Length: 193
Image (cartoon, rainbow, N blue to C red; front, side):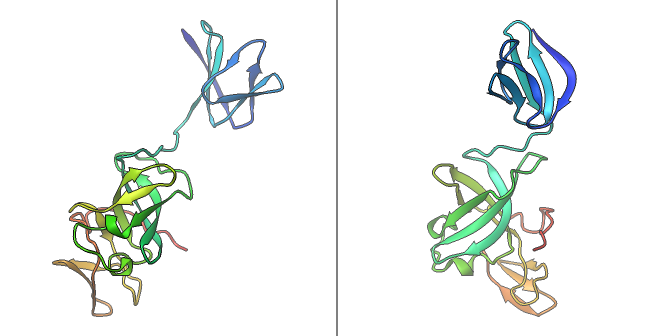
């Protein structure tokens, strides 16, 4: 049975030696010394003679089928590039700088001629992961997927949904997007920068 010692370690901290323990989850061995890979709590399995480091508040791992939220970072001719920030159902965010792409054919059930007509840089989008390797591919096909918060092209303020378009009361401007039925119901802060 594993014995848990209340020892908290940081990445690179010494956990033990290969004479005492075998490296387990959250550890690595270098020159006969076992080190922590992560910030966590050390656990020594006395029966199996394995040292583990159990991560404290680990980041969320992504997998195919996950519903994710993020910000449109860029648009190209046939793809939108989204910074993935959160997985639905998890309170902890994902690792920094995780990007996914939405191909023009995966934006909507309807024909999409131009990516720029469906997403604007800075929009917050709810998408589904459909492929992990070799790169993360997303889709927003489905009524509950798409833009959940949009920002005006002109003044960059949050827009209000009116039927199937967005309206900016500050600029008296209307814009189209691939909108989610959850538009305005999801609370996410727009990152600065």
